[in-house]
Image (cartoon, rainbow, N blue to C red; front, side, top):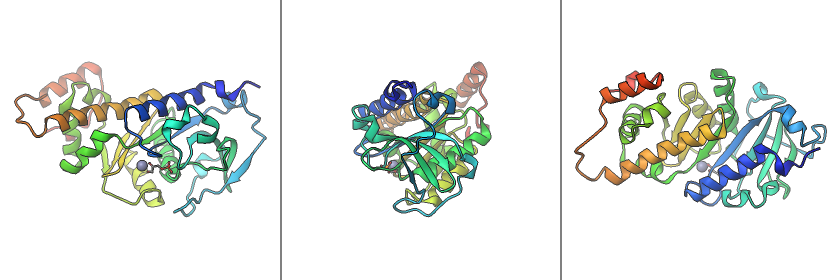
Length: 274
Ligand code: 13P
Ligand code: ZN
């Protein structure tokens, strides 16, 4: 059996959480990541018959929710209350590898201080179910509190079309990176089934969903793709926050955006253009 600390998926979780912390997106225990793993790959590192403990799905503020679509699937997930800045130094305490079962989640590795998965597990699992229906290669759900994206929530209309369009105008690459735009939920109580259901509903159409005055969710096939989505939104939001109080003299026009869409062969939300 290989050493789990050398597993590429553990390294990816360590590197990504460290980067998110370094960028100031994830203060204290802010943010969470869940990553759907390949069972055969995990079996190279762990005895899949060795369940350390079973953790009920119902968390601090939670009732049960339906995860039958994910039965048997294995995820690596950040722990609730754990600080992203500490993950790389102590993955076994701050991360867990869990398998979805009928009576909860089976802990195969990690959370070794008695911890449990993120309080946002309902949103993560519901988003995985929604995204897997759209794309069988989907793997990662990432939640974060990026500074400028959050700042923009307070000063920009929280309308999906207007918010997306403003971001598309802020950097040339935006419409190519997230041509499907950004879904937006109003402020809602986090950690609940309700916000999970609402986020998953948005994830039918969007890979990015803003939780107003809280943060953002991203979904993708790989850790890099998902991180890159949030990173690009955050960069655009930073440009907006640096310029929105100044007279705008130049902008990227819709006709330019259409040229980009055509050149890169992506399908954009045409109804989000003016
Ligand atoms: P957890 O510590 O439970 O992952 O929660 C952090 C967070 O960002 C809540 O939205
Ligand atoms: Zn949060």
